Length: 114
Length: 113
Image (tube, rainbow over all chains, first blue to last red):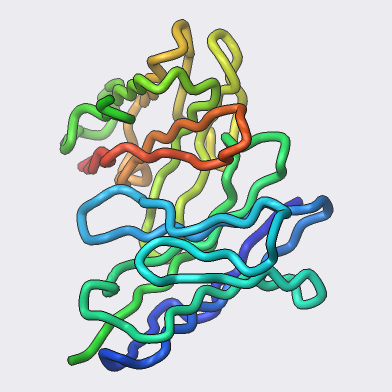
């Protein structure tokens, strides 16, 4: 079975500081991994995805994530936080054969302080 | 393209009432899914479909029915609403192709009293 754990339900950073949101996965097959962002009262928007190509994945809005098989991790980073990055972030995993079945982590709310 | 659309945006039901949440997509995607979002639990898969006429259960299917008669539509039926079904419901669609991205609708916020 697949599962995703996001460490830290709330993360607070100052504007301009490094953003690091942690995600660890469990999968018995090669995983496909995703980070989604949800702004208040909106649906989910894809930030980036890992689909077994390059292990360092660049996404929208300056975010990137690195797939580390040995650590079963897919942490999301951004060098410099903006106020507009305040949102809830979800890590998700699926098997390559069925993109209709995403398994989500619990979510991490990012607060950006001025 | 409108993408994935959901109606209604908000709904209040009394315990025991039934209703259907509508979901439609205009991207000709094969896969469609329903998730519910509850605080601290992320999104959990209710039901999904890999094509017209084919549906399967996800993590939390009890109390919900689905059918998929067309590629475009994937309605979610609550048979007898319970307060535990108070949640935000998201519909998503994706292609069998290589992009692996699920596109999400704007959500339906349901309250059961």
